[in-house]
Length: 316
Length: 316
Image 1 (cartoon, one colour):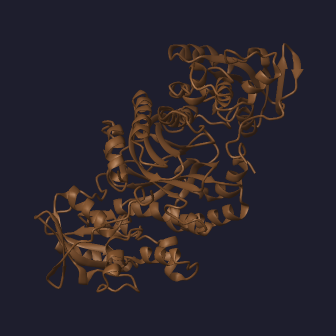
Image 2: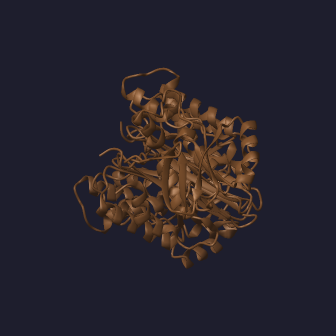
Image 3: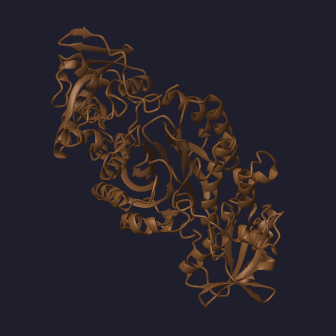
């Protein structure tokens, strides 16, 4: 099968039926008509075999995860996801792999009402890049440089589940629900639009909770105090085990959000998250004093040596 | 160097100073404010080492070519290029390679006034994907399905120069201007916006002139007659040599445009192209009779067995 047949067979059906897509897959570019006055939010994230997903990871996970990691970025910006472009590189024309990939991708795309509007397919080492476009009202994007001293720090979901899944995979486990957070993360992107005008800032914590919180602190010019006992650790992790705590704080690949909010908005945010089925936990607060301080029941705890998981540095 | 250092050092400076970029590199997504009422044109093309560019191709060519191939697609749609997202995968943290890549990318980006607004950097087999966004007035995109019988068929630039360069590279040539059309194509993207409202259709011919013309014919529901003697062959190619003619007709990698236009608009188009420094040659016409017919001074010529160059099929 050549590139044109691949696209026609597997990817054209993922185009959806969005009236704002004036021209979808099949020309030199797609033509989109964004809602008048809205701003566009664009993000682009890749999966590379052996870096983000291991060799042998199911094709359906590739498709689902590719959309999930980009939905997570849009969620962190508060944007409503809309359109996607896919660049896929695969070693051979493998019908089964492509069918499963397209099925996984399509499942997540339908959930999020994302229309695939373009892309390309090339033979080469297995990798996929997705560019995802979203929209939001002007000036409403959530940023990482707008946290203020006194704001509460919240996290969605649980911490360390993906790193735990990765560790199980590395130990040879090939089935079971505990692999899911690693192979097939389910980010709380639906919360993003609700956070607009309510949260003071947000960041995706996929590089590791402490590393990404650190980015928010640096950008916002604040410090933070985080209470270890409050952290929503993944089932199976125990905060009194140093290794477990490190997985949760710095293991990475948790496609969750860290959100900052003023104390008076906490109730609104918590109620809204509950309505959307998103777990939201208060874990600390921003401080005017710079630096990140961890405490456990009032007692100071040293920060881990490694704060996160860098997909550039992680292999060498 | 980790991903964040790489981005800060090499890619953040490519962000330009576009007031419509409300938020550029450095958060979970970029925020753009497209001109009110304009439509958006989006395209996404990849370079994979060993497929689109050979191992050992200069890094500056990677940077320049990546932008060029995407500018070519936007040109074929008639869009004005605006913003780009870059996904780069490289085997190691190679300062010299990254500097040269960023320099090449930056040169083309400044020429085209494209602002780099986001992306990601991963360790892995060398490959780069660019998503390029452009804008145009509503309904003015050039398409491949709008050619009409009787329209003239034009091509920009010359045919076969890239395939000739590729052949020289494959024979061990590593320097000289004849490699440029292959390593560092210079598509006539500036012509795109001028074609709006003037051409009846357009397509990028990077898969090979005959293959891409074939796509236009199929989409438009027309046939075409092409006069071999009129084709603007690259210097060094001779139309009486069968192999040379095949390089020109089907060699691929020529980032040029095939444009259709009504006879009465030919003069306007030719004059406009001349003002922009773009060579535009009339090579035939669309016909109501389906199929592609080649002739040489009135005498029919068989079409080549291979019509183009498929980056999926081209290696196996």
